[in-house]
Amino acid sequence: MKADKTKIIRLLKTARGQLDGILKMIDEDRYCIDISNQLMAAQAILKSVNRQVLHAHLENCVQNALCADDVEEKIREIMMIIDKLSK
Image (cartoon, rainbow, N blue to C red; front, side, top):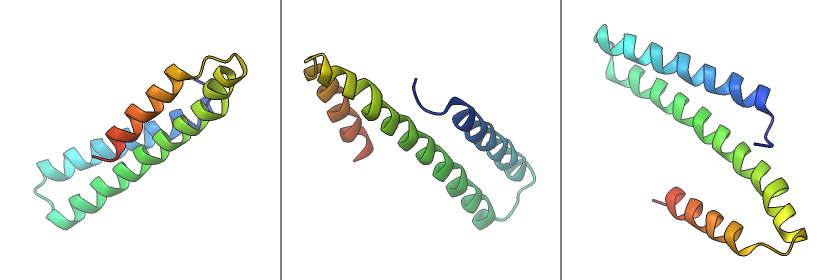
């Protein structure tokens, strides 16, 4: 993976902390809107991480495949990711 690993790990640990907090909120029967807000915050972090990983993939793996004239597989991978993201 060519993305900034330190930043990615920090963000994922933050998301994990938020998920732990959400579980606690549910156990404590906290207000639904508060739980929903925390869920959206965790989702936003995960979307940001995914975007960074995909950008790094395009900047490195796909670029290397273009230079090696071996791009068809990388295009298929990107198309599958786009399909998953658009659901």
